[in-house]
Image 1 (cartoon, rainbow, N blue to C red):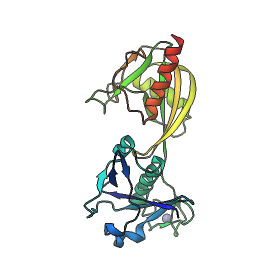
Image 2 (image 1 turned 45 degrees about the vertical axis):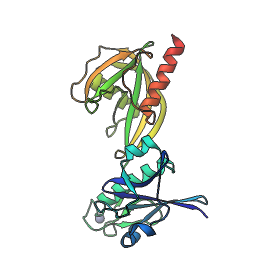
Image 3 (image 1 turned 30 degrees about the vertical axis):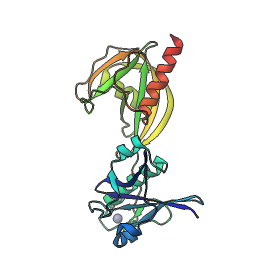
Image 4 (image 1 turned 135 degrees about the horizontal axis):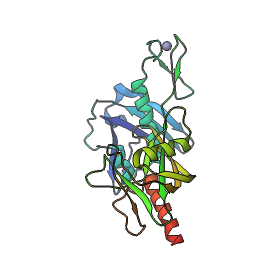
Amino acid sequence: MPQIHWIIFSQNLLCIYPQNDVYTLPSCIQHLSLTEYVNDAVTLHEDPQQIVKMLDLQQDTLTDPNHQLVSLRDVMMTGINLDFQHIARAWQYAQFLRTHQYCGQCGSSTRQVQWEMARHCDVCHHRTYPRVSPCIIVAIHNGQQILLAQGNRHITPPMFSTLAGFVESGESLEQAVHREVEEEVGVKLKNIQYFGSQAWPFPHQLMVGFTAEYAGGEIAVDGKEILAADWFSPDELPNIPSSVSISRDLIDYTCAKLRQNS
Ligand SMILES: [Zn+2]
């Protein structure tokens, strides 16, 4: 029998049971008094080992006293008994369903497509899919040091990270890397190399990671998105992001390379 995992969102938080050090998803919903919502449940994944179901209560509350509601960021940090990819996908899909009940072209009601994640308008045949927003993220080094920047959302506690930004329409990933870095810290790059990627469901980014070499220019922060930026030696790093993020992977990888070369 496959194991069933219920991903239930209530008030933008995830319903879990705390067990030891890791969160656990509900395996059934009978005891959760959710019978009135059962028809809203969506099966997101099904294989011989596991079935993943999603239910979005939006602003409604749960009455079960044993559950806890936790943020997705908290789930990422703490760990849960299901691949986080399923949680990320469920959250992005819940957002999509909330915002695509009506056709963006003619305003009619849309319906769920049975065989793919999409909403379809039967009046004008417009079909919409969950949004994925590509974002570049880049670790820059100058041979001895790594360039890290403090964003405007990381004032307290102060945290320094790699540079990142949304890809604009019509732009290649490499062009986005050059543009974002020049806009945010004013330096030029060379030797841009693909590193890896990570789905980041806050709310629907696909982070595409690169490493790059400094090619010229003085650091000049824009003062809006980026408040401070500087070169740091691998052994004298400031406060940096936690290990679940691609930014941390990029910093660790770049610093390991710099230590090798020193
Ligand atoms: Zn339509």
